[in-house]
Image (cartoon, rainbow, N blue to C red; front, top):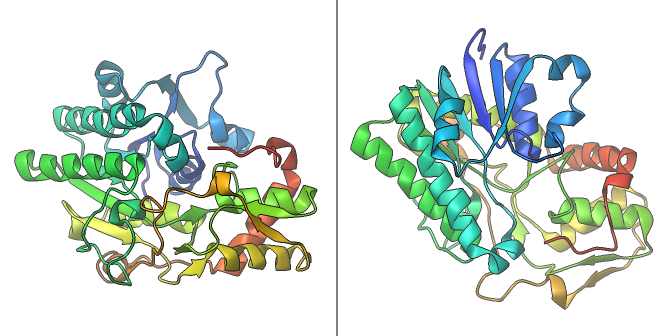
Length: 330
């Protein structure tokens, strides 16, 4: 898919997935406006990792997704909008639930209204598999009920429903893309895969929360491609579409796979009560049915778990100074 000369806004562009999406859009010829959260350090987040020649081709704007005036100016003149800006840490949502509502729900309403007012050709709203909660059945298709098992997941359910309402009420051309767990280079220590890798590279043991939860892991380059291919497909306007590999692995098995790549299979893996989520809040099993993305949009993942983990290990090894393995990051 070519996007030559199309003006594209990415909110949350400084984040893990956002920075990879910006790269993918640039490769397809898009003119990218990257919306990063304002700070006094002129910090572009993970966009700073892109090659200098790529950075020159990005229009970076810094603001706050909660400000409707700034959001409308950001959307102005854009053909397509990819909305990724969100608070995403589940443990932090236990501590600051009101922030999750203001950023994830109200911020999304600001984007929806701006896109409606500015008559964008397509809004791609990014959701999460956490909206499904612990699976009632697997694989999980898009008809699976939603279940707010954390303030984070509840806020994303609210955002998804607002996107649905803008399609039904105002015919806004919006697609909700629902990635399952994404991993890869540039991911923060908030996620368990970078935590395991950074600990294994620097310590004599790995400390995690629950080992039993099962996750469907998608490499970040596949997620970025899926956001573009699914989000811009005319076949799924007004719908939600899963992005996932369709294979589940437990946290414990993933940790063992990482240790195998590092040739440290004898390293002990321990559980910490500090890292264990409340029992009714922990989502135990997430495995996607990705047939809608495949059959209607022509997307399918290219990376398997081992390939993705190998690339991630190599990147974190090279950038280990960015991590603090002794600190539990919420």
